[in-house]
Image (cartoon, rainbow, N blue to C red; front, side, top):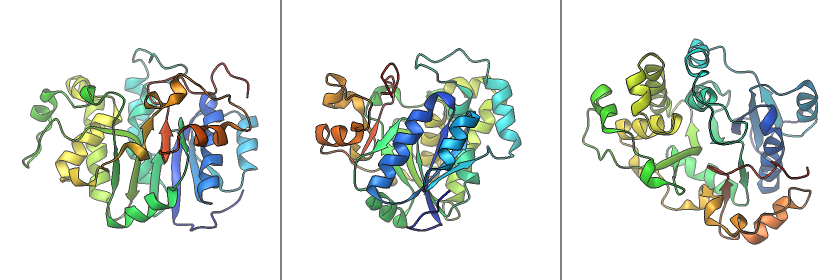
Length: 279
């Protein structure tokens, strides 16, 4: 297994199970083609064969789930939730992102969901992290993103804020862990409360995404939401919806040609591109 040639203190961090392994490989490749950053993946149930393949990749590191009791509590309580419409995606892992960020063994972490690919300019995102944590706007369904008003009665925020702002997508975010520790803890707090209180759980919009919104509001970090969609563009807003690209060795090059003005592309709310396509 290789180590990052850029810095051992920084990594792109993600989470992957057996079903999303093709996405992990493509995410890793897309990062390497932008800059040789380490990609660290929490193993949510890869097969032995998949783990062996991953371990042969330069700058790809597999991590066990952290030994944090909150993860097991989340798994126990939320594993019985109704299945999602998205193929092969479970509910309980959608709540654990802030815990994984907290325990990631790197100074700087860019979290990316495993149905994301980097098209270009990734070093710019790490550079912008010098000024504070970074969050990316929701651009598939921003009108559905705000938390329910009830959340702010159950979990009050002690500063003036607009409960409808910001609308963010949690699939891409950036953190300097020690500097941003209080914000990460604020990200975890609604998740921890949601485990034991179904009313809080129902008031949080879209699992960890609503928890992130609450943390941004609580910490006064609205100004750290980037002002462009190019760092987390939903595939719905690209030509790929009508002209999908074949999932093969030329996938990234073809996507970059078709989507020239986006840095990071996300299949949020859409079937991942490797499903029902030859690999």
